[in-house]
Length: 338
Image (spheres, rainbow, N blue to C red):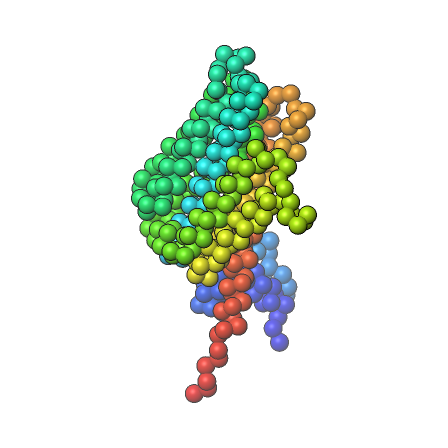
């Protein structure tokens, strides 16, 4: 009968990667049991902490190594393209809305002696990310990375220029800087992978492009078409465009091989968590009532904007690990007896 101490040791060793346990678990259990005191029923606290620490380091090392595989690199190429498109689209939409507002109500910054000031930063940001998108589509990896770094500097400059007069702008624009840094990280990870258009294929690229065009058309129509007509009295034209855009985007991503697609979802998880983190941040600091940016607000900003996307990535990676582990277990067939 297995001793309780041995059972508890094996539970602690479960933190190690499966390959490591398969090769060394019995040897480690033997060494641990031989070093235990007579009558000992539980691992010592220091011993348990050491095993957990070493197991986590082994898993992190294995995870970092697996991130360099071709599937992750290919997934990162598509994720970087989508992230750059998102940043360009958001800045471009704000530029259009700003031009519309300036045409109808005048430039609100004229009173401060800065004509067009609200439009300069969004124009620079939209152009910066648009050229990154073009470089990614042309498979110019080094150029795309260099341009993405320049785009990050543009984002930082846009915040810094307005900081003296609008100190909360840095807080409200935290999401853009985080998304920009994530895009650079994805481009670095994908630098030795295949181009995004190759991974998507011709049909996937066409579907993805069509979905993005429809989404852009909807975004352009909304400011000039505040009350769009309804179809059959059920849905508006803009809602139909949104559904069609989403369907085309999903259809395009469906063309990606399953292994790469699952990793793409993991890499997109922190990007999708960025607006959630921004919303939670503004609620946590009560940004509408706060009078000034205090050191406490800065700390909360950094912790939430870094922590929530990181948590989303970790959870998505765990789900992928469990899913693929279960799949391997199910598909593994026992060897016939000799």
